[in-house]
Length: 110
Length: 115
Image (cartoon, rainbow over all chains, first blue to last red; front, side, top):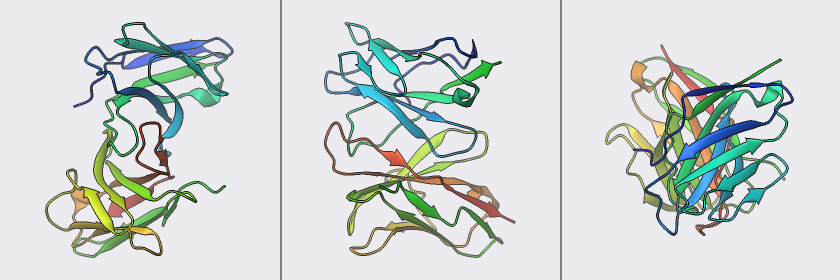
């Protein structure tokens, strides 16, 4: 079973920031928080990951709470092409299999 | 640097036939993972392989399914005597090593339809 809890769906207006929450209250000290997204039926696309510090890359920012029990993925300026299912995954990384939950279906509206 | 490649992208088989799905990992990646996504469901892990070795096959059905990753060439997921319930999207991912920060990158998938 997935170790994370996400809202099943969210809406966001185009051009606004999309903030996707994730709860992972049972995360252990050596587990990372990974985010992937799946646009329609394409292969999952890696977005970002972090251990305990906040992370930013060209796609998104990841904010992890100090107790590491929850995190937020931020898409700063959502576009229609960001409409997808977003998966928050807790994993030791590397060789460990990824356990996908149901994710959050983000719909970006014009 | 080319991404993970999978072929064919679409495969149609009749019940009882064999399906062979291929995955070429990203250049420099020696770890391959297969996942399956049944219609309207999430992705489920099937098997993890390194070159010439199966490391974790805990998600593989016990019968009819097998996987290999030979020293040369792509990884192959083989399904014998396919049934309608095997219709799904099969995704392959690869990573460079097994280190904690080594991300899995996914291919575009093979969509198998069993008639």
